[in-house]
Length: 153
Image (cartoon, rainbow, N blue to C red; front, side, top):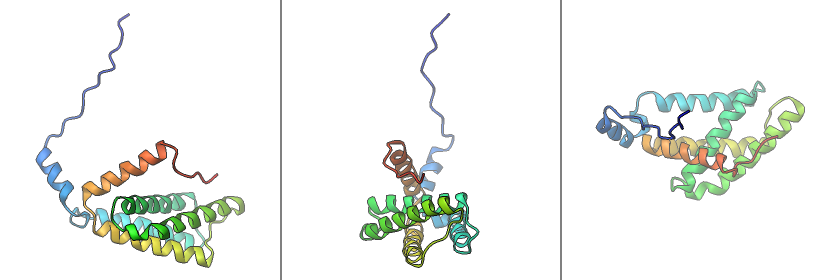
C-alpha cells in the first residue's frame, strides 16, 4: 500500500485583479452586504429586547461584539475598547442568566451598554473595507481557536 501524500494544491483565483480591487472597496460599495449584516445584528437585538430572543440571536450579538473588539484592537475605535469590553461582559451575564431562567432579557444598564457597543460596531462597519472585514473575521476565529474566548456555559 502506497503512502498518501499530505500535499494539497491551493485554490486558484480566476480573476485575481478584481479580487484585490474588491478588497479595497468600502463595504458600503460592495452591494447589499452591509445592509444585510446590520439588519441581522439589529434584528437579533430587537428580538431580545422584545423578549423573543433565543440562542441564535445571542450568537449574532456575540459575533457583532467580537468583531467590534477586533476592529478596536486593530485601530478602528481604540478609544471605545473599555465600553466594548463592558458590553461583552453584560452580554455574557445576560446569556448565562438566560440559560438558567430560560428567557434572554437585558437589565436596563446592560441594554444601555450593549446598545452603545452596537452603535460603535455600526460605525466601524461603515468605515471598513471588505479586506478589513475579512481580516477581522480571521482574527476572531483565531482567538476562538486559541481558547481566548469566554464560554457561556
